[in-house]
Length: 554
Image (cartoon, rainbow, N blue to C red; front, side, top):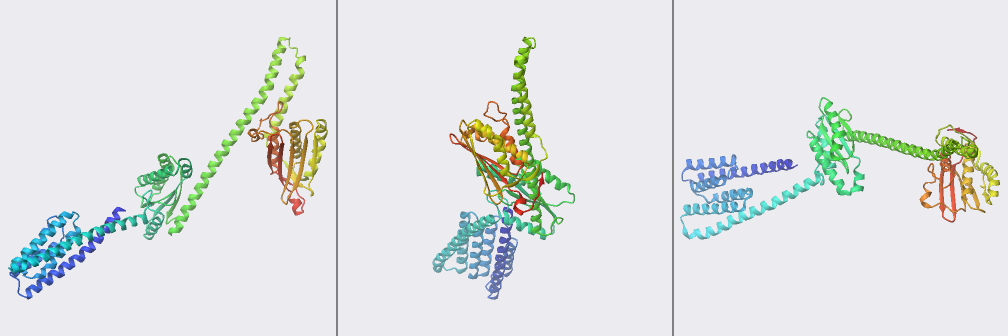
């Protein structure tokens, strides 16, 4: 950008120089013709020589420090030889020109004083009149001083205005944080490149992890990464036509398209491996090639954004797959750990009894019942675990949820009555039909009600409420037991978690799985000393809503 400003400044200086040169040429020529016409020239050949040298010095302007003094002597020569006061504006014009260009103010004022002294001596030589010299000299001093002061003031003001214009121009084109071109300038320059019909490659780069870094480390950390990205992109893509900060965490890189696409592949390698290693964050990118992929700027950007989105989607899917795989491995690990723990306990018991029987000549009669109980316990545990984990095909048919609840109540009522518990069922006003595996649903409700009975002390009560709306059926099973502590509430559905001395910890896990198989939800609410409520929600059968009787298999 500084190079552009310099070029622009050079162009402006060149235009100003042409105007000044024209003014010099016109004035010197008119002055020469006028003095020759008046026959006031002392020596015409020397006069013409001085005029020509002055014109040449103007034409082939040089930055040599001696040039202002050389031109000043030529003007004095023209003045003396021409014998005319009309040379006075030429002094002032030259003085203002060099005062404006001169950066050192003391040298500018030295040139002003020297010009004034040479002019006064020249006038004194021509006029030969001391009576008029004092007044004329005083006026000349004021003129030269005024010209120098005004020129220096204009120089300073114009320099300040130029800096302001440059800074404003910089702000309209550059991103203040990274120093790269901004979004609007990116579009403008891409449009220019396409108008030139130059084959190119557009990369849209998105910093994937920047938002998470802003959250964890603050915006300063994110800004540091953006600056680092900008610097690295300029290093890795030195041949870029331009690089811009396209958005908050997006960058655009436009590269010339070479005949061999191997170069493009090397660019992709830099984005895939080198850039993430250097910055420490992952990125995704989309590529669009002009003119193969699009013929206009908007279509080219749209193509690159589409490829960027597809690459993001691919990255999201891979990440989701990895998370699911990790979750499966974690669950398998928990299940294996819990299964090993649960089986180890009865095995330890059986081993102990066998060791005792060895000491008693392998007479296990007194421990036979206990050994068989432990073996049955391992068999039940294994069966429940297989039921929980083994995938199987379930046949769903339309059944009444009311009938399932009544059937379960009839199965458990005698057991509940013997423990002093009461069961209260509040049926729905309307029939509740849903697609279900009836055996699994009965197993689910039976397990839930058994848990409620076992959680309560004597003379407890279980309230079952069934209701429905237009889409879902809701079943609430509430007991007035001691409740579940809040730190255990989130763990009750985990495999092998139990607070019972003889429980396997798989009952509620199996219930949860059955509810999921029926596309339902299972929630729990509990308060210590008041009781626990399990809320089951199931979708109603479509056949009952539409009036068509059908069944489904999943």
